[in-house]
Image 1 (cartoon, one colour):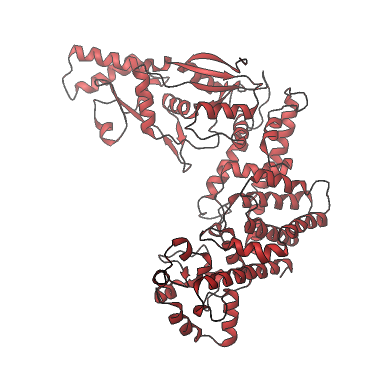
Image 2: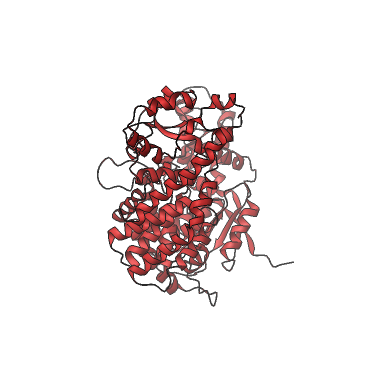
Length: 586
């Protein structure tokens, strides 16, 4: 049998709370806000009150022992000896209630967890207005563990208030006092902790977590690095979270990270900083470096840890710089993408942002040249779904393209060579048309088609309005300004014997029209409505419109299968034409 990687320790709850306050135990939120509903916290205290087990905790010994300087604001008296791996939500709940501290919810708002207790019935509830006014309830049990509160005086004060509303017998007084003391004694509840050795590698810790906590959210390498930020650079972790929080809400005035492309999470921006600072996408080795681990000897060095955190800190400064952030989005606009609604992969945004920053700071590429280069790159990665499967591996390969290079022209040439290697003649002529044979409304090829229409300054089908104007994400109305319309309507196809949704909803059967036209066209056969709309436009304008919207002449007279095949080819050609405007710098 293999040697155990852990040892078991029993802690009274108040000891864990004290160690958290002192900093002996790091209680980071591991990237995710507090997600437990208050009713689960209520049940947790109810189980403890009744003496039921509440599960064990998994801690991980910190590799660096002893006293040392903590990077960032040092709000703790000691550096952490233990990191919480499993049981974070339970420990956060216990800490928040016993200390009367707020938690951060998923909307990044602070909120107190207020649990009530009825000592006569031995019942817990989440406090509400009715309970707050009812003298039979202790409306906020956190008061019981306030350092300025004596539990004896608390019990007497509660009984005095209860007597004002009802008679209380001596027997009832004793039972209520006993119940309050029993609740107060929850601070001595014995908790079982499994402590993993610092020599256990992080990938093995993650596997242990998954095996003992299969219903939880599996940890990843970003979680571990964010944990280290909480421990060694708390201000850096706070800056990440603050940036992400502000990016989710439009600014009332002044500079803001809010944008129409991405509502980033801390781990996403962390990945951009790691790629910029360490030229890596796989986080496992970076995590080891940030712990101060010497990858050769396996030992830990404070000097190494400080050095690597300095690299990360500098990179994060560039990642969170608002000028960089918004200049990068200009490259996405340059690529024809108007908002996140046109992008199927947020990872593509994150990794392309990292390459943008590498081009700016490591290669000193001129601003407009960098914007055009990144626009071409983003169009390619979005069209091909480059970072959809095995994104870390793919980004590692892309970062490897830049190793050993140091001149702006080399950076541009390296990316353009890769673009050319991916977007070959076969891709444009064969692969892309096949990828358009789908009914997925979030197909990367479909979004690239919309981006191409923007790049070609196309007008909406049978309209004077520009596609790019009607795709403006700032336009909000009850009806979308631009809608997808079935060129061959559903009912028409069903009458023709085509009933499968996948066939009816082929993306080659859709065109962008103004919503008023969509209502007018309704379910008319194309041979009925199309000639009427054609008559609105002069011949030259009609040909230009059909060219933009990939419609072959006489398309409405074709059988459906032939129409789809021909239109896919034309859509692929439109996408290529749109991309070529980026190649020409136009």
